[in-house]
Length: 304
Image 1 (cartoon, rainbow, N blue to C red):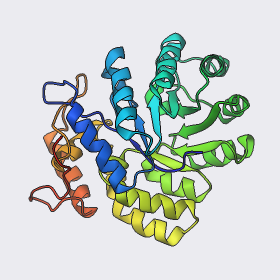
Image 2: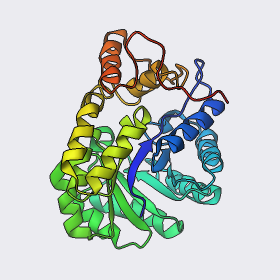
Image 3: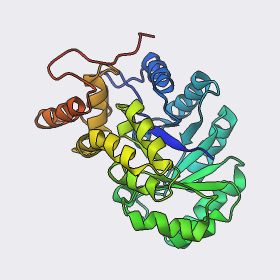
């Protein structure tokens, strides 16, 4: 079971929107050095919705090659069309990903039975560990715990990223699915508490900018050390909020740029962080001691 602090990795881009492969290498090395337990690539934070199919697969391919088995790579392969998601999942397996993360089909609003058949079809066709991803605030569809329990009976559906922020959801899924089914928080603000209640980790946006702190907090929470987890998380709380001041990944990409880790690139229809919000994100970075305000970046990997 993959556990701990997993980063929902931003996809670095140049100012013209082209993918920055050299920076991707730097980010991966940075996360390994900082102790991140695993990478989730080409997901929501990775701007999967604006990647071409070829780019999506290339991000997975390069990430797997660069990691070289040092930590798990989970590939985002969800789509609102079952056939597209099946193709992406099969390609991720062929490229060597350790697992896949499949978001609920967005926009077309399937029923619970439709969700069940969607995920079952992909799991039956591609023998790779698969993690469900429920984020109704973005998809307009909610994968209910009872449907998760049906899907958990399929051997290679091994867990869920639960991003509702509703703590009772985690307990309900655990009660229905048992201890061998992995539960990951997809909500940084409530991730610590969900892990203290028995979740296996967090797939985190905050981890992009604070990997070492997130690793320490997750280790403490998973081990039931509430005092240590709360102490560390208090340093991160402002980031958990301000990195969502505009839709993800707008704020976190600006924060990574402010830290000197990536260029400013982001793709339409997403736009760079509004000037009026930049001070809030900068303050959160300074509070977490990731930058010294109005100074040069604190952390910056070597150039590719």
